[in-house]
Length: 184
Image (cartoon, rainbow, N blue to C red; front, side, top):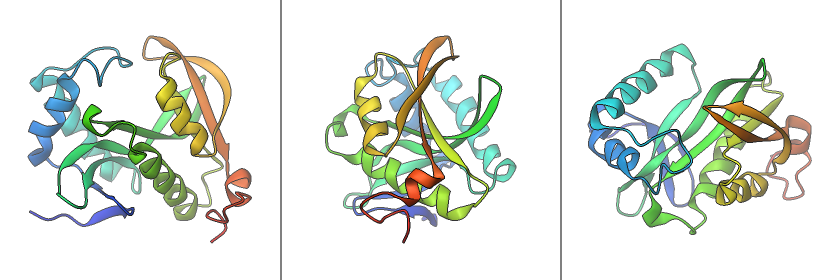
């Protein structure tokens, strides 16, 4: 089954997740190295519940959601990335989230996905004043991705049992990016 992509980058296709992605997602969620900054690894059953929830969110939050990150060249499932509505410290924001298989770390794929998601979010809705990324304090790799995405550390806040670092980019900052990406 071929699904319509939500977004494409030079190396990735981001598309809606389906139940056909369960094996890949369960493998990703079961990897303790990939999940070390999350509350816990997930069993296959927990992965299936999470996947079913993700799928229901597509209609609940049109234009947002967690999407399968698929390598264009070999069609391999690499992880999940997307826009997630979040409540942090009583404020509702859209989070740019990314979780990729450790086999593809340090290749710029998370940054590539995050930048495409950022641009998509700001272009798709004038009602998005800022985007955030919620990052475990020890996850320096994800913090670098957020910074490459034009985000700056704005505060720390409790989230999922951790005192996480909150990174944000305001719409005005995005519009003024020196590369001109935001304004195009």
